[in-house]
Image (tube, rainbow, N blue to C red; front, top):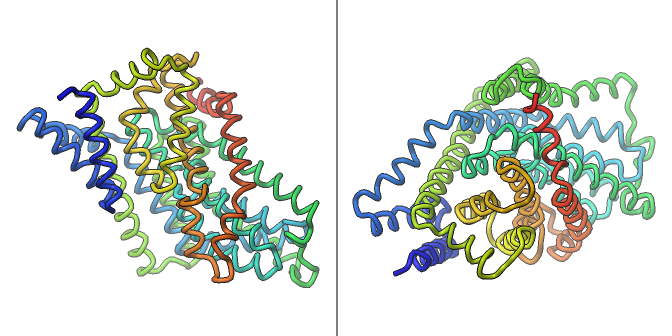
Length: 446
């Protein structure tokens, strides 16, 4: 059997196992291990062992549990709730002000947690009831929460970009900085859309009356200080890192410790909450480590087969596709896979094929810059795939968390303008790579 057929058999077997509902790391790692043993005998067992050793020696992976713990502390101690109260009082007088405040809340939640699910959960439990109670259009608010929560896998510290960095062997710090400007740009585009739409159609996002936003001046400033606390925690972590005073791992430790101290000082930390945060952090961290281990093993087998070279030859020599056409086809495949897979599964399935191929494309940039830029493109595309009917991941999360009077038809209809905004953001980052590469070049070029 040719190596190309073996690679195709491995890929199709993995997809079949995933479609039967097997766990991602089990399907990918299991296929990789079986293929290694069948191809190289008992010596093939060195491949997963080597992947495990590589994982254990990867120092930046220590950032993963630190940031996850920080996010859970801020969420479980309700410090994140203060942000929404602040936006409620300070932005209520503006048409669509609470929806704009929700987007800003999601950006800050993303900067605390790095997971889109966390943003969705907080938005659905805190913002959604308030927006509906204030007579906001239900389609507008469900679209706002879904779009805002998607920023969690792009705005640093993104857990998904840590996973991409491990698979692509790219620097985590540069990837995080590369995601910052596109993430903030996308958030600004959401805010502009909401502001214009609610200015044209005020009934979609009515301004709060004076009685609804009644608060003394002292209360306003108290809420402002309480809402700024998460920003201070984030700044205490990221500013020393960007200035080159701390390493990435040291910055993550500062963030986790600062969040814990803030919760203790505000008397919101209890033993039960601490144990819950530690338990959830351990569970999420172990899940990601198993997935990374499986992806590394699968990628090693693919490298051994020469499958990447065969695919490169197919695209460039036999089909004669240009580098940009290959890149666009890759992005379209993510949109298709996003209808039934989450971002992590998509990455570990195609990374052994796509990442080495992207590194060989002649796009007029150094290979490291291409891999960092492609990581941002992948992340934005999976955000779009999350919200693309009929089976977008975020659509069903929204349905599970929304009130019964919000139907799937409402959810499908709510997301269309935000998907168009995200597609525009993706096109801008593809056309102008410096949107993603400017900040890491500035920081690491010193």
